[in-house]
Length: 278
Image 1 (spheres, one colour):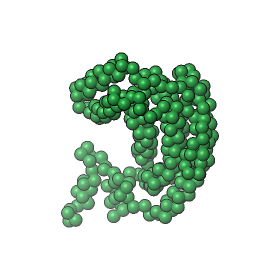
Image 2 (tube, rainbow, N blue to C red; image 1 turned 135 degrees about the horizontal axis):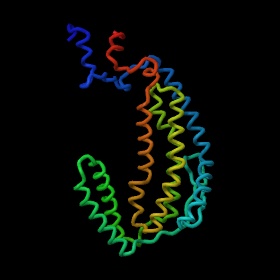
Image 3 (spheres, one colour; image 1 turned 90 degrees about the vertical axis):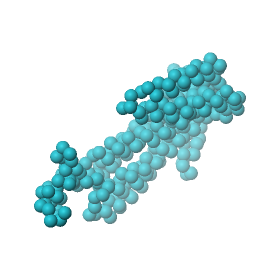
Image 4 (cartoon, rainbow, N blue to C red; image 1 turned 30 degrees about the horizontal axis):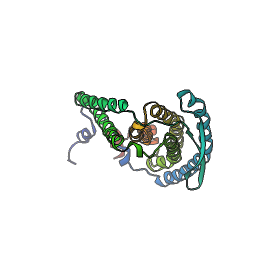
């Protein structure tokens, strides 16, 4: 292989359409890793401290927001109760006061019928939307477990709508507090520059701060209207899992940005650049 001309060797770095195959940044050597490590540590500490300090203000904003919206959806008053977010931070977390009913027989049977129909439909979806079919089946699995539980042990269901909204807002605040740390160990280790690192953290925090109270307001409205039968599927599929999925999506978006090396020199996998390096 080494005896072949350089232009022939460079063909290994070309795609089927002739374009350059970029080297994944995870395999690239960063010359000044110490600088990135120290900047990462400092940035994580500063942003985590500021985020945790802002948790009481975020919870207060949620309380005001929910107090205006909850009565419109028939969820009653909004009350804030002290909860520990992390071992050393206590925050007044809001929750609704409305009671959610147990499922009536018509609601139970209609939900069972709808679940059967959705299951059948999921097997006839085109292959290009197969992930959606799997998501529907996962949702139906949780819903069938809920149907079974409420058919046998409805009177023993231990959760209330008030307790659920309080717990989920608490979990939401904990996720918000961890955002800088999560990005610190997954994203800050790459050389994207301080501005872009700060920007993706602020974008993620801003999105979650607005999204989470509205998310559980919708959960509360659904459960108050249609019964506790739907609480498990809302929690398992559309609860904290959805919040984490949002962070993963934003992380993927941020990883598509060019790092400082790419912005300075060009695509790192470009054969011409590798030839110059050699």
